[in-house]
Amino acid sequence: MAATPRKNKTARRILAAGAGLVTVGALVAAMPSAGAAGDRSGGGHGHGHGHDKGQGRLVDVQLLSFNDLHGNLEPPTGSSGRLTHLNEDGTTRTIEGVGGVEYLATHLRQARQGHPYSITAAAGDMIGASPLVSGLFHDEPTIEALNRLDLDVTSVGNHEFDEGARELARMQNGGCHPTEGCFEKGKRFRGADFPYLAANVTNERSGKPLLDPYFVWERNGVRIGFIGVTLEGTADIVSAEGIKGLKFGDEVETINKYAKVLERKGVKSIVALLHEGGLPASGAYNYDCDSPGPGNGISGPIVDIAKNVSPQVDALVTGHTHQAYACTIPDPAGKPRTVTSAASFGRLYTDTTLTYDRRTKDIVRTAVASANHVVTRDVKPAGDMTKLIDRWKTLAAPIANRPVGHIAADIENPADAYEKPLGDLIADAQLEGMAPADKGGAQLALMNPGGIRAPLSHKASGAEGDGVVTYGEAYTVQPFTNMMTAVDLTGAQLVTTLQQQVSGPNQAAPKILQVSKGFTYTLDMTKTGADRVVVSSVRLNGEPIDPAKTYRVAMNEFLSGGGDGFTVLKEHKNKLVGASDLDMFTAYLAAHSSASAPLPVPAADRITVVK
Image (tube, rainbow, N blue to C red; front, top):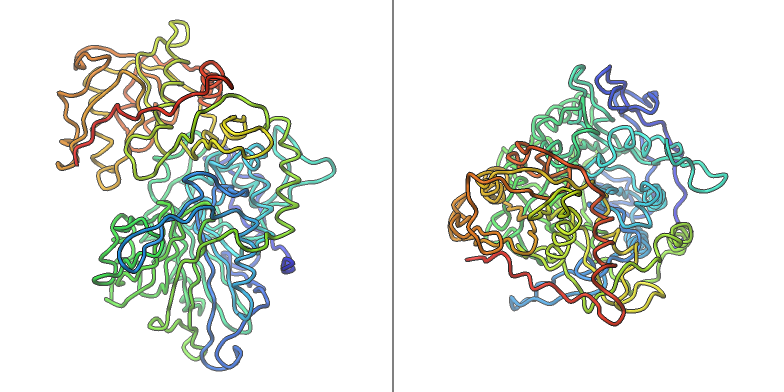
C-alpha cells in the first residue's frame, strides 16, 4: 500500500530552559507552542471501523505501538532477527527472519485497514545505537522512515540522549547537522512530523520540561491524551556531558501530575508512553504473563510503576528492556490495566483496542484488549521504505562495504547469556588496543554488555561474501564509538565492580561485564546480591586478585564515568584516553583474521556460572 498522506506538520516546542541548558546546548531554537502545553489535534490515519462506524456511543480506537527500534531500518540479522514462540504444549520454537522497517510499514498499513480511529505510538529509543545506514547520518534516515510510517507520537528513551539534548532538539525541529552539514545535496533535514514527549525531563533550574510533556490526539470528537516519560535512571546510562543541566524525574509522579492536567482539560482517556519496562518469566513473545493471575508472570521496574500510576491512565505502552509482553497489572484501585511492550528492532508491533465511551469521554477499561504481532517478512515490502533505505545505503556504501575482517562462523551476542562470545572478542580487542605501555599499559579490559548491539553473522549481508566482516557490520555491533580509557583500580575496587554487576540497581537485572582473556571468576546465582561473586575465584592470569594492588584496566568512557550503576569505577585514577572502541574492534579483526584463517568463535569460558 502507498503511504497515507501526512497531516500538516506542527511546530514542536523545545522549551528555553535557562542558562543551565544553554551551556549544554539543549536548544537549537525555541519553537512556539502549537496549543497550550502540547495540546494539539492529530489528524488520524483515515482507516477503519468502530461501533456504528464510529458515530455511536462506543467507538473502538486502534492503538498500534512499538518500542526500541534503534534505527534498525534493514532487517536485523542473527539473534537480533529472531523471536521465540511458545507452543500450546509448553515447548518453544524459534521464528527466524523477523523485522525490518520495509515489513513493519506493510504490517502497520495492513493493520490500519478498516479502522477509522487508528493511532500509532511508540515508547522511546527510536534512534541511538543504530546500524550504520542510520547512525552514520546521525539517525536522520530513521526519523524520515518514522515520518513515512505515520507515527503519531513517541516518548523519548535514554538513547534519544546519546548525542545530547541539542541533537535531540534537531531531531524534533530539523536542520542540518551542526558540524557535518546536510548529507544530501539540496536537501535539508526537516525533523520529526510527530512530537517527542519528555514530561519528566526538566531543566534543573526552572523545572520546565525540555520537550512537550503530553499530546492530545483527536478525531471526530474522540480525544485521547498521551503522556511521555523516560526512565528516571536515564542519567546513569547515558554520557553525562550531553545532559548537563537536565533532571530526570520520577516516572509515577510525573505521569500522575500530567494525568491531572489532562483531566482538567477534559481529556479523560489517557495512555502513558513509558521508556521503562519489565522482565516476563518467559522470553516467548506470546507468553501469557497474566498466568496464573494479573501480572504474576512479570517482574522488574514496570510492576511497581504500573501499580502506582493513577487509575486515570487507561493503558501503559512501555519499552527499554527489549522484552515482549501484553499483561494486565492492577492499578492502585485494583482495576486491571493493560501494560505492553513489543520487544525491539521492529520485530513486533502491539495492537490494542481501546473502547471509547462518547458519553463519559473515557475508555471502557474492561473492553481493552492487546496482542503482540510478529513483523514477518512474508509480506510485500513497502516500496517507499525500500527506496528510502536504498538511497541512504548508496550514500553510506563507500564506508559501509569496506572489508575489515573474516569470521569462521556466527559470533553471537545472546541476550540470555551472562558471558557472550562476541563480548569476549570485543574485550580482547580493547585489551590489545590499550595494552602497550604508551597506549595505557592495560592488564585487562571490561566491556558493558549494553554497548554490544548486534551479533556478527557469517552469512553475507551484501556482495562481500560469507564470512567477511564489513565496516558497516562492525559499526552495527559497536555504534557508539566511545573513546577507550585505561585507568588505575585497586584489586578491592575491581572486586567491588564485579559485585555491582549483581547488586544495588543491577540486582534485579544483572549487568554482567564482558571480560578479556586471562581474567576469570565464578558467579554463584543461587545466592543474592554481592554474595553472588565468589571473591576467592577472581583471578588474573591464574593469580588471585590482590585487594591492595593496583591494576591497569581498559574500559570505555561510559564505564569509567560510572555508567550502568558501576559507581566504583568513577573512583579510578591516572586515566589515559585512547582510540575509539570501534577503531580498536576493526583493528583487531584486521590483525587476527584473513580469508584463509578466519577468526574462530570465542569459547566464552571466562565466567563460571553456578545456577
